[in-house]
Length: 413
Image 1 (cartoon, rainbow, N blue to C red):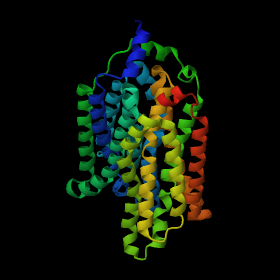
Image 2 (image 1 turned 90 degrees about the vertical axis):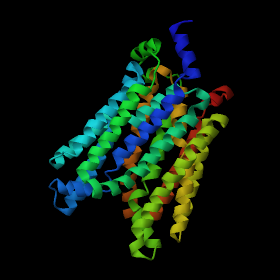
Image 3 (image 1 turned 90 degrees about the horizontal axis):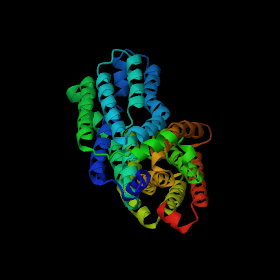
Image 4 (image 1 turned 180 degrees about the vertical axis):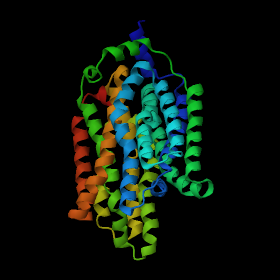
């Protein structure tokens, strides 16, 4: 059997270490996301501590510092994915965890706002542990278990996004803002150690040679499913984030007690994430059994329909329940997107194409709040819900139309 045949066989069966690697990737992704998001509650306070005094400037610099990471990550994700295809996916996780350890620890030593923004940019450029984990798990897990494994990993990532801000609200009063950054750096350093010594990746000379020879996109026979998944990932993040800028104002219209608006807004925002955490692995398992495309189309359609009553709620509990159900519907999308891409491209190009997928999601994450805020401010808040609903239903129809028609392909993809 040739090297290429051996490589293809290993891709279908998965790595013998896939369960161990999934566990370490899950823990590492949760840890790094917690460390990345714990600064949210105290970021404006830290910006002020670094010498920015004007209120408007504090808000502006907080937004710049927060968004810098995602902008940088979106630009370099395909590059890290391609390097992972050539030199190994584990190496990319080691690089990301070490880079994030240094950058987040140094944030606690920043002397001015420019240093903080530069370090936030560096985190985006050097980081990407969770996205690298998605690539590693997608390429090493047996095909018939891939959506379940990616769903479990997605749950860990989303849980980190929930837990991070909670820890960020508790730690600074106890150990100080700078101490919190150093603690976060130490947390990621343990993820670096676990990744370095516990993750195992078999060498694949055939994949390395193929990755060097192929141009990523050139090696994909049918590009339609991949393009559909890039659009779906962007749409998913757009739908999640388009509502964020208006939620507090929207809640204020339906909650009579002004002092409860902030707390209820936080619950509304968390409800969708909690729904996704609980549903991701289950929907991934369902997709492994019935196919990824029906789950993708169904999830988009259900989420789109659930947005319509959100535009007409009369009490906070109705909005909380609807956001939870919408999050549960969308929870299976990220693992299914990664699984379809994984099954639609050669192993030698999987990392670079999944990197493009991550970049498209960041585009949605940035565009969602901008367009949602603009539409909500100039047309009306109901228009944000209804407009996003139309986009999701259209995305469901598009995904259904471009799905592979051959029965065997549909089962695998």
